Length: 162
Image 1 (cartoon, rainbow, N blue to C red):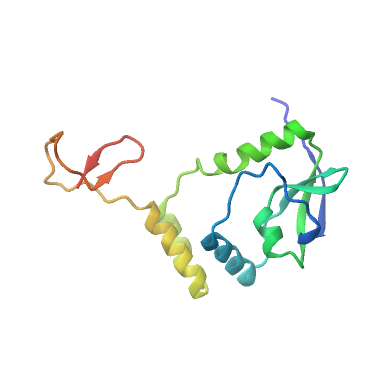
Image 2 (cartoon, rainbow, N blue to C red):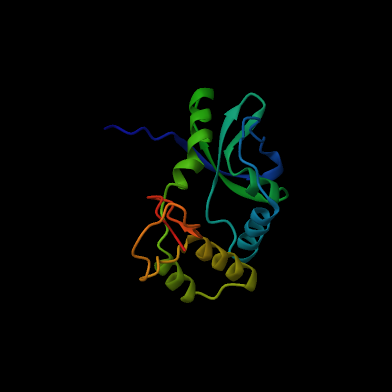
């Protein structure tokens, strides 16, 4: 399979100069904005926004919240050579494909334990770990009753227990 390279260049652009994509379907709750602010304050930029050139200027495909949070700062932006339809496909699929990744809480916990994070970031990471953990079914649970109220459900297979 031949894979195209659609990246034209890396540019530093003031966040407020980037046009938000009117088709952006992602919303950003306050806790996500606070998390981005914490990461940017402690670490800085280690990822890029994605934009394409339009007649009106550089339009975002990804990185809307980073551009908003750092509106007065030059942020790293990858400029891509995509037409309207291709940009829409990237906008529609980038985050959903990322969320398909599974997390290994043990590896994440070890990674976190080996680094010194601010209290805000530590709290954020702990909440991520807590959401990933699914309790094991009790050893004594050896039969299934259809009328049994359950507390836990496996998101993969639907097995319920608790």
